[in-house]
Image (tube, rainbow, N blue to C red):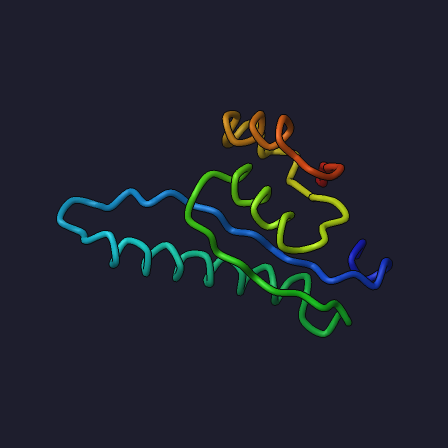
Length: 110
């Protein structure tokens, strides 16, 4: 709703590390992770984005969250970052890194 109210473009960034399962090639691992991202995005898209008048896209990136946001901020104008309030409980390391490195303000959403 914030993206709609601000008439802003919304980019959902899905970062992940490549941890291949036993017997899985790295290329197949990346394809699997990209599929997982697309499936998760599809659920969010249907629930919150479709037909809401919001300009949005999904970017999948291999690497650490803070590094990927930093790289994105160098290429694209970013006004702020929105994270879920349970991010710290799910991944304290990524949460702490993000708050140390964030190039723009961070909004914590419910």
